[in-house]
Amino acid sequence: MLELAQAFGRLHPAPKRTLVFLAVTAEEKGLLGAKFYAEHPLYPLERTLANINMDGLNPWGRTKDIEVIGFGQSTLEDVLQVSADAVGRLVTADSGPEKGRFFRSDHFEFAKQGVPGLYLKGGTFVLGKPVGYGQQKIDEYTDRDYHKVSDEVKPDWDLSGAADDLKLLFEVTWRVANGETFPTWKSGSEFRARREASLKAAAAK
Image: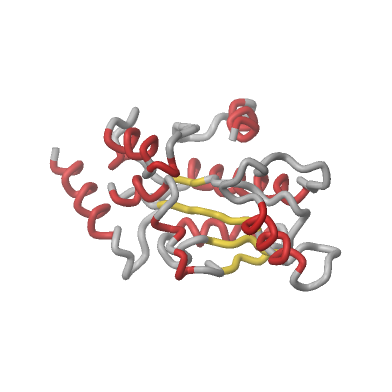
């Protein structure tokens, strides 16, 4: 996140819109940091275009794919698709929708207030590795390290995939920050009505 912030800070000209880089705490305690900001924002949430959530990166190498948690929610996915197509990457849907991950990460507190969100997860089709390698590494991490004291940086990590994903996030953020239209919730999203109501209320002020 700090690398992205520094990269945007070096841009000339700067993006058209203000970017806020927010490191929230107590996600595992109930998204408390995100909840606090959503209730006490620096900028009104009806004027906040999007929330792009980073929750862990891929440490197992470059991947062909990038996964969208809660796929089908907002037009931010369409922006992602354009950016991914430009570098030959594949956008895939949430591989575990039954786990409810879209509803238990920090962007959810913004979604509840109507702000469109995008939550990416590292892909599983690791370049140069056998089919199934990426999922194997994820399963091993979940079994051995997830929420355990052993969840630390490992000497065999390959962060080239994380770098690719960050470049993609940079591109998506740049496109949103310089876009002509607000991202929106897609038809059928349970958050669409809240966004439309907040925009209508803001316009009436």
